[in-house]
Image (tube, rainbow, N blue to C red):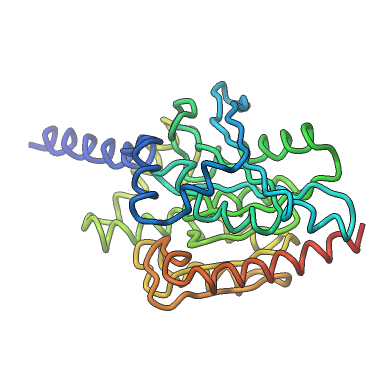
Length: 310
């Protein structure tokens, strides 16, 4: 009986680990179709936008599928009045999604005169297969994209990062290893992976939270990282990079309180925008005008400050 129980327990923990490391994912085409059907972005405008698909090699033996979008000429010159430069927004999608999920945000940055770089995280979309790590390895991939921007456009490029959910937490973790980002927008980020998994185990999957430490060990043995190493709030406390935290007030999947805590933990150069009526990753859909206004104001403030301090 005990052996049967242990086998059952081991199998259950392995399955839980698989849910995180090897999640069920939507294909690039399916994500694109869903975004079009929901009207989350202007497909006609996207099709006429100048763009290029390419691959960037990660430091972990796989390729990252990327797409660079160019702003219209009338938008592209807006920053030249201050100082000649190349503003670039790197957009990070969420768990089980893909780069075309970021197109709703790409429109906003293109209008602000940014080149926009969207990409598939490891184990997502057309990128190489490797364990999903909820931001641990993904932060190094994001650094690789920043390297590419500097190699391609030179030292005058100005990088802004934006992420949604897992992508948001990735952008925050990335700030701990790379100081080249002008500012970051973190939409519905989790503050700590272990705390998130405890919350979801209790409220969504109805499994005992005491299994989390065992799942943590299995994940470490399989993928080489501990849940405690995915703690954006620990990075937020020490970095100087300006951060705009965005969260839907009705988000139960990643509790709104997580962004509140990170905002409180950051010393300065910060802003918090909580969107009434928005559930998880729906803030830009629920109040697109308000979202764009807050992002525009935040970016312009810190881009100008960054340029003036050069």
